Length: 160
Image (cartoon, rainbow, N blue to C red; front, side, top):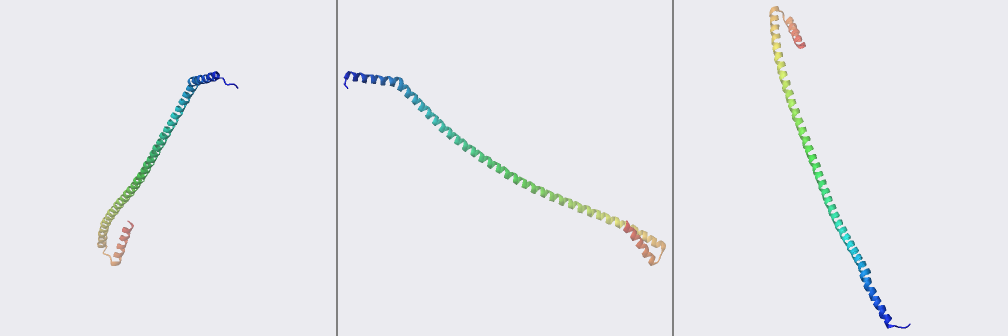
């Protein structure tokens, strides 16, 4: 193997020219495409991270809203229980008051009817007494017949 300096220089110049051409037309665009690809991937990773953060924030908001809705529902249920309990107590109290009022009215009616019956009975007994007295005076009967007559009128009063 012989060493030829002109060949070596020519080879070095060809290699340098090839490198410059490859850098300009092959490696430059290839590296530019690779850099664009790297930037695109980085942007997608950043977008995915921000989307994940937004999703986590949204999920946290939804959990908070759900918890708030549960609390409101529980409060509404408790309020309904309290209201229904109060209404039940009011209904029971109203029913007790109404029954007491009806009882008092009934007792007053009974007392009134009793007084009317006593008045009617007195009037009737008074009338019967007058009739008995007039019959006794008419007959002037003895004591046995007078007792029989009184018993007879008392039985008539008892049947009425």
